[in-house]
Length: 345
Image 1 (cartoon, one colour):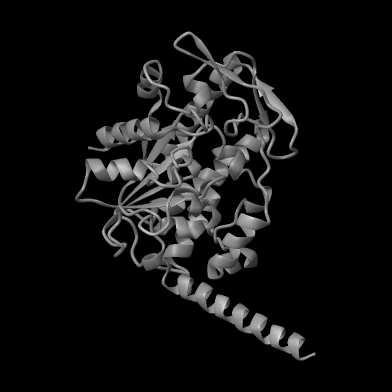
Image 2: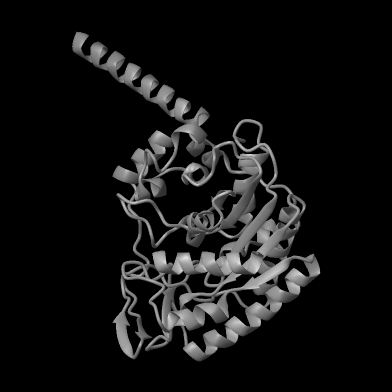
């Protein structure tokens, strides 16, 4: 009985101590969370808002800054290394403009809804905010491969306020528990496990099966129009927050490299295999870009298309892989940053 009582008190004290550590990390997250202390892939196991503090390229004052917004491509997926820093688009932009202060707002697997939620959490929320002024410039990176799929949401339409769920708030306050949960309990599902894809590069076939998720279009017709509406609304909200909003169109790997067979992927909605031919994907690409240009014109924001330059570069250099063919590699992100920089300056 005495042993059980002692064990109970030890467990209780340990739990309370861990809670205290979690809350301390939360309140001082912008000072503690950095690549200086945590390298590469550890950040994928922290709550999504902690990625804002990842980079060493901002001065931690979070003032007079340029915001780079997007999904996992902006976060640097495909370039992460357990030892080295993650060579993100923001990292290379800062190298080109060392006097500027860049902050990356990225939500892996998210679209404009998620990114706006993330920004407002850090900017406006009474408890969670760490950034106390709007960006002087926003570089919004739109990923062709899946952003409209991520944005499609019937419940969102006509909603003008955004909030995290209670579960998401708890994650931000208890990052250590969340990190432990992802590390030892939750197992990620390998979406590309049953999918076979091959691409051509310089007349050679490259097997990219089981090496990163390949996303293909699955939102069409009326549902696609809803996604455009959602994107329009969120860009409108971003525009109110800055003097300069730039919309960057980031082409998908399928636009740059031809697939040997019809490109295959896994549906986000039902988990089933879907496919599309290269020819049909190019038609989708042309139509998508046309509609996005119209959308940006209505909002009077700059549309920056990276397609032509990246198609030329892709013939010389493999901009994706070799481990993750669903995202751009270090060379890809560096080139993306160089094009963006040249078109903004």
